[in-house]
Length: 203
Image 1 (spheres, rainbow, N blue to C red):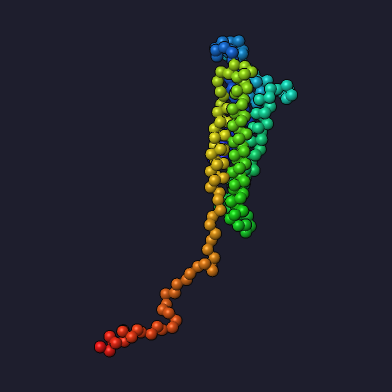
Image 2 (image 1 turned 90 degrees about the vertical axis):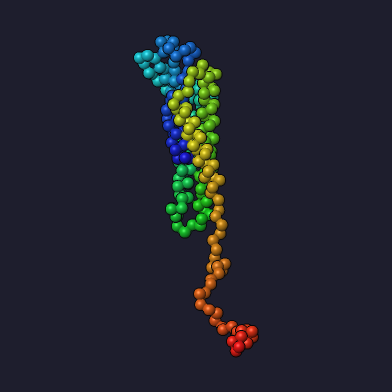
């Protein structure tokens, strides 16, 4: 779940159809070339016969919600790589030398926390961006990039919670000193028969 959520956040970061903005209805906006698809990296104009994108290169002139969403989504994409690597290396089928089980548990918990941080960056970006776009220009609908970010955020959050909560130390294994061995053979020294048993034998 964490891996799939990370892929969803990468798709949302790389694509530009986060929201569709327009002040009028969709048909009027298409005729007037005012239907826009906004993303982190470009603004695209959608019309009946044209789909043209303008790259947002003026970083200092961009609104705060775009700059912040960019930074958080890039951070989420970068954090996902070590998080997934740590979780994979903590699997029971992978052994790094003769490390104890507690080391794997700690590595798994750390990976789960990184996945939770990834989901936190994703939720802030995917919520703040449409709100900022709505205040800047009328918001008409959400794009597939935003849906990809929401699904990725949810998967990262659920996966991170499960990994963090389930990666607990197992009870210590019993040592040889704590084990009891039972012999199938009889006792080493014969036990004398009881007096009553001897009397009944004579009778």
